Length: 391
Image 1 (cartoon, one colour):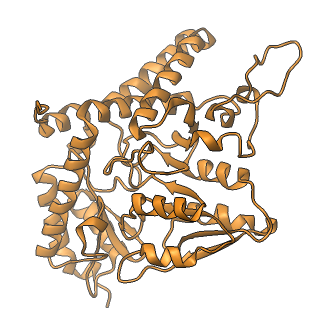
Image 2: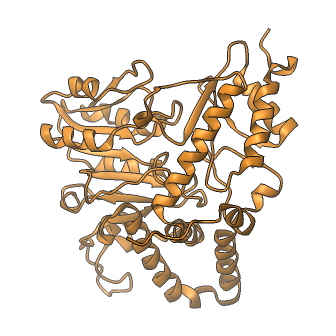
Image 3: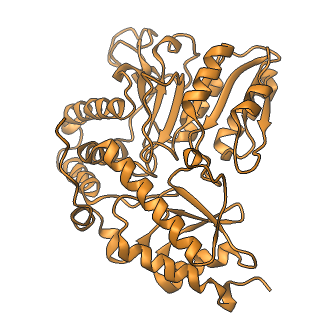
């Protein structure tokens, strides 16, 4: 087997990440900076719209379909199973509201979930659907605990690939097998996992997946993907039906409500073309580097963060097992206010990090280099300063 050439990540940094000129950016689990290629694609789209307006529509439509193919490659899906959505929340809502619920049904999820993967399911209470939240134990969401919460009333397991506040990585293969064994549907909020980790829906039995592109995929806010396994497309009620949801033309003399036979039926109206174009450029970049190379590099950066954080006097929060770890590193330190520490990192060291649920969250990407890591180490070491210590 011929190995692909090693990637010069310093060259990638210089060519694609203007953000690195000012910031040591460690907040990709929040909103990532755009690579230069994606910014160029967005600027080119704006120029074309200024110059041509609706004349550019056929080219825009072709580009959307090219990007659909790229998104399908990203998760090993068929293009007919991929729709564009405005956010992860949007995608979750389409599934939650469109699922064929019955009075008394239950959804099982984790107590540590991001609100967007809790509220859409909780909002089904007026339809007789209840939510069971499974608690984390010793930094882990255990498969056995999720299994114990599933009974004959359960129709859906909804889980994040990676939990946003703890960095815990759920075992999608094990959970998918559990769902198949119990005969229930499996929904994955993939926004914190897709990029650092490979997702292959042709192998892992995921029924539904949603992910916006503005975190690890390096895209803009407002452009994401929804995956619906082929056999579910006709079983869900289509929410948000519009001119783009149907087989026929919007310009037909007699409009006919014949839904598209694929996931595009959920794309009811006009696209966020600017966002999709920029997201497409970002996905192209990831695919060019190679998804395995991207995953390896991001996880290597996360390990480097863990090592330096411990050396600077911080404790790693979460499961110590390597198979539970993700690209999100969550830190704590007795007597240190993490929100104040995050503010001091940015103000005094040019390091961008986040505070989530009372802990400091660090999330590196492929272009973070030794210089960035050293700035982070110095900043973490100085967290004893009076301005960042709770008295």
